Length: 175
Image (cartoon, rainbow, N blue to C red; front, side):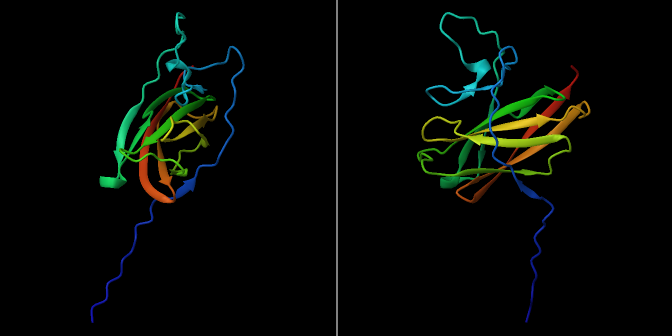
């Protein structure tokens, strides 16, 4: 009789990212990556344009990636690189869609994997257009974080199914 043991490599610690309230910036403290509700779903302040008014904000670029395959494949739009100063909070709008199948009545939960010291994550739901799932990931950088690049690994669970992770590089720059 042959016996085999399967050991799973549990080198990753999945830490649920807690729900948090979005802070409303005071006048004069707005940032291009502030979350702004719009009729088609939320957007970054820098990407919302008022007719006949010059936009004072630089646009916020997002990237897209596909997680899983076949009928389970999802498209994830998010920021993969964020530049910030220590002591600031940056927002990363995560929007998830599925080809041919709207994600109505689905639940999105986020987790982190080995977040660097001095970086705190919370999120709020409701960022995507109808039929999608969305979240605003709020990334709070401690004032004493050293100037450097930090990898932040964010996991996505939809209806308790783990879809894997996306990577966002946080670059802490001088004031």
